[in-house]
Amino acid sequence: MNQKQVLKRYYREFTLSMGAYVLVLILTTSLLKRLELSRTVQIILALAPVIPIVFVVAAILRAMQDSDELIQRIQLQAVAFSAIATGLITFSYGFLENVGFPDFPTIWVLPMMFALWGLSLGYFTRRYQ
Image (cartoon, rainbow, N blue to C red; front, side, top):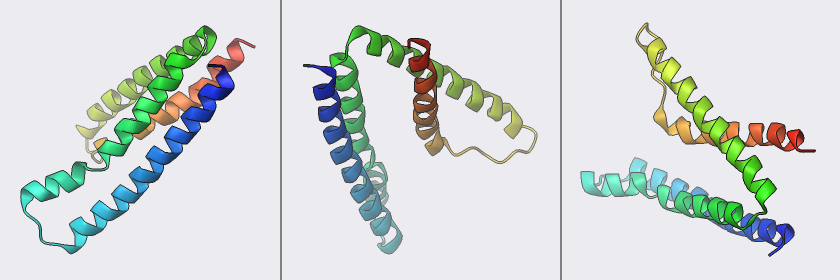
């Protein structure tokens, strides 16, 4: 499979998974706000948006696995940077919370990691041009 085919499959899988995520998020948020539900049902609905994100992660991993070695190396460097930077940022902010800074919502950790991954991907790609 060439890189163009890998990306085409990735974009299709990613788009479908993110579309499902948006729909599930809207539906579950609406249900949680409007209905009186048992604690168990609330927990299930609150976690339901994670399911489509698992498919997003699967699409990412499949695309990385099927990419050539240079792209895999660039992706590894970008992912490593994003994981380390996210860890350092959230770790540091945890100390700031001890002196009165507002709590950092953990729901933002994964989006932060993905954002740093995307931003660093440009940097690491340019290093090989």
